[in-house]
Amino acid sequence: MEENERFDFFAMMSRMKYINRWALMRNTITENIAEHSLEVAMIAHCLATVRNTYYYDPPHGGSNVSEEPVDVGRVCLLAMYHDASEIITGDMPTPVKYYAPEIRDAYKKVEHMASEKLLAELPEEMQAIFRPIMIAQPGDKELWRIVKAADKISALVKCVEEVSMGNQDFASAEQTTRQAIEDMHLPEADFFLEHFLPSYRLDLDRQAAQEAGQKKEQEKNAWQTYTQLSSPFRGRG
Image (tube, rainbow, N blue to C red; front, side):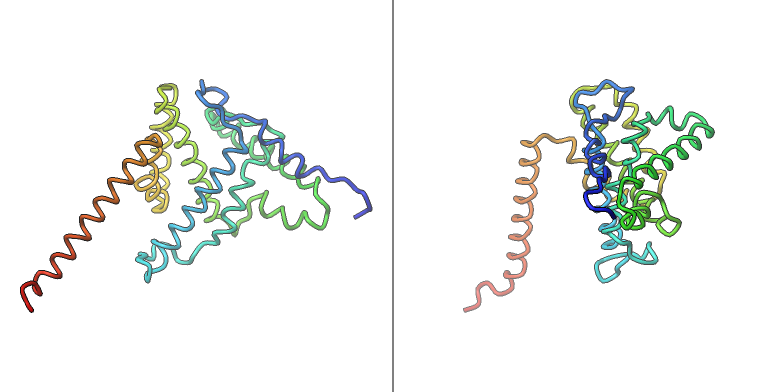
């Protein structure tokens, strides 16, 4: 690497915040791919952790659905950069991207070319490190399933939030996106839908009220357990 040589990779990454998603929809709140990528990384981290905790490791209550634990850190990295190519290609609406196999396949080639162009903006010594993150590798197939699920869950969250704000333009998308997630048959994704998604429909006050109610119920159960355990010893002196 030459002295004072310039590389544009991270300056290009910073432009993710200028590229909005959901171009064919009326949005109450706009969402760019930088915001989306962070959310996908957070959800992917959750899904990978859920898999390792509940569906792999029996001592923690797991059911051994997964043959081996997943690399949580790598899942997060793949998720963080999963839409990086859209800095060059833009965000193509899903109905257009998957309208026909020919369009889907051609767009994949364009995405690959865009990723290669971005990688070329790194020092040569770093390209080999970033290439397996930017371009899907055969050995990461299962990790990409988790990232894809997180990507769809992020889209579902967007739909839920928009519908909750009265924007019915997202009502149909909410139903089809949820069905697509369920059709993936990933236990960790189903876990998220059951245990985490419902809170997205609540405002901050209702979240706080629900938390207070749960705490009160826990205290009530704890007191009942105490009285049951202590009752045989009452009256003894």
